[in-house]
Length: 216
Image (cartoon, rainbow, N blue to C red; front, side, top):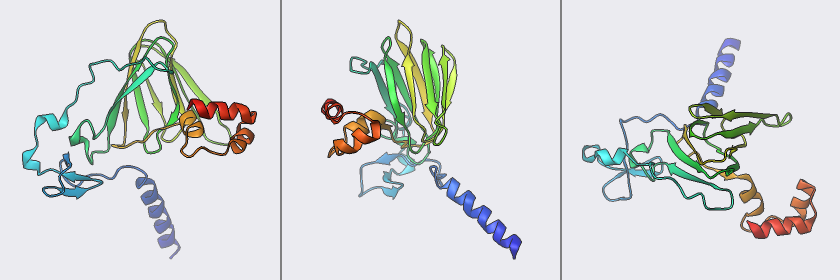
């Protein structure tokens, strides 16, 4: 009986862990379509008849650089099911990240995916922060051809520390990894978080908090 209970607990633990990731598909592919009359609803999307699949359902181009003329000096070109319908149910996605000189991809998290990043051009300072209570900063400088992994759910960032443009490409183990940019979410929520709460949490004057909220 004890062995049975132990096995049950272990199986429950494994099941809980596995459920945190995209489930394995039970078909070759499920090309997503917005057609409830002629599709089968699977995992949040309608599936096209597999006999109608075409090559363009599985491809997308990221050869064009993204516009980095913004406040942070970076641009993320997502490659998800919205760009490649054939990604639906396959549990992966990707992104091209362009950086202006000294541009950054600000601290953010992906609640549903681990990210692996490879630098194609330039030099990036990258890092992530471990969870409480240690909050350890793990960081490294990457050059062309270098690879770095950001564990699922942890706050991470990339900064171009060079005088020229930089390009990176990342892969994520979810078709919908999600993204929470820390500053945007905290100071740009709708409706806004009470400034007195944020003032206490960040140990800032309430006027500073209100000013930040107007910026986001």
